[in-house]
Amino acid sequence: MPFQDIPLSQIERIEVVRGPLSSLYGSEAMGGVIQIFTRKGGGPLTPHLSVGGGSYGTYDAAGGVTGGGDHGWFSLYGSYRNSAGFNACHNPLGCGVVEPDRDGYDNLGGSARAGYRFSNGTEVDLTWFGTKAHTDFDGAFANQSNTVQQVVGAKLLLKPLQAWDVNLSAGHSINNEDDLKNGHFVDSFDTSRDVFSLQNNVYIGKRQTFTAGVDYQRDQVGGTTDYTVDSRTDWGVFGEYQATFAGQDLRVSLRRDNNQQFGDHTTGNAAWGHTFGNGLRIIASYGTAFKAPTFNDLYYPLSSPSSPGATKWASPATSNGATGP
Image 1 (cartoon, one colour):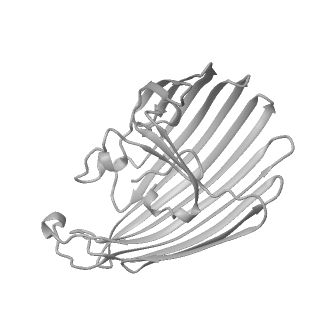
Image 2 (cartoon, one colour):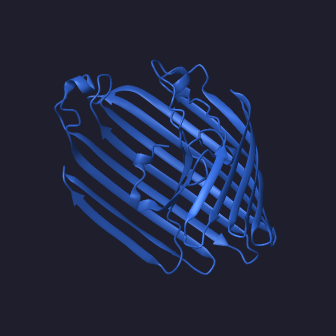
Image 3 (tube, helix red, strand yellow):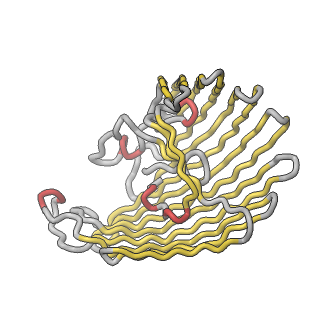
C-alpha cells in the first residue's frame, strides 16, 4: 500500500516492531512491521475540524465525527490536501528530462469505522478507508499519476473462555494507478490483496501467553502490462510463546508458509529482554525471514529486485496491507 497517500488526520496511532517477523507476518516482514490504525472513536459525540496551509500553495482541510456508548464506537472522517509543489529537478542530468514546471499533488481521502462489544466479551469491528490522489513529477515516459486505493476490513473477537481469545480478521485492499504523460494515458497497474487470519491467544496466568493460528493471503496484479504470472496465494501456520519472569522477557515464535509460487518456507524468531532497576533495558534477538519477490521484481520490463532489508507495512484495516504491482 502506498503509505504516502494516507492522510495523517485519519490515523489514530502507528505501531512499529523491529526485527525480522516473518514468523508471525509472513513474507516481507524482514526488517520490521509498521502497522497503521485509523481512528476508532468512542465516548461522547465529538466533531473534529482542522485546516492548514503553507508554502508552495499548500493547504489542507480535514473533518469528522466520533462517538459511541458503553459498548459501541464509530468514527467518520474526510480530508483534502492540495499543493502546487515546486520544480523537483533543476538539473536535467539527474532526471533525464527538462521540465521546468511545478510538480504538484492533491489527495482526497475518507475513512469510516464502527464496532460493538457485547456483554459476553465478543467484539465486532468494521473498517473502510480510501484515498484518491494525483501526483505530478518529472519523467521521460510518464510525469503524472492518478491513484485510487481502498481497504475494507472486518474483525471478530470471541472469548470461549476467560483465558482464551479467538481473533478472526478478513480484509480486501486495492491499489489502482494510471500513469500519464502530459495528460495522455501511458499505462495502468491494478493490484489487490485478500487476507484472512484466525489467531488463538491462550493466557497462562498473568505472565505467559501462547499464540497459534493460520492465515491466508492472495495477491493479484493486472493492468496494461502482461505479467507472466498475475496471481498467487500463501497459506501460513504460526505459533508464539511469550513470558515474563523476574524482569526477564522471553518470546519464541515459529512459522511455516506454503507459497503457491515459491514453495514452503520455515521461519522463526527468538528474543530476550531484561530491565534493570535504574530503567536500563537490554534486548537480544535472532530471527529468520524470507521475501517473495513482487510481480514487478520478476516480470516488469527493466525492473530490479527489491532491497533485501524490506520492512512490512500493515494496512489500516487488517494486519496485512496491499502491495505494489
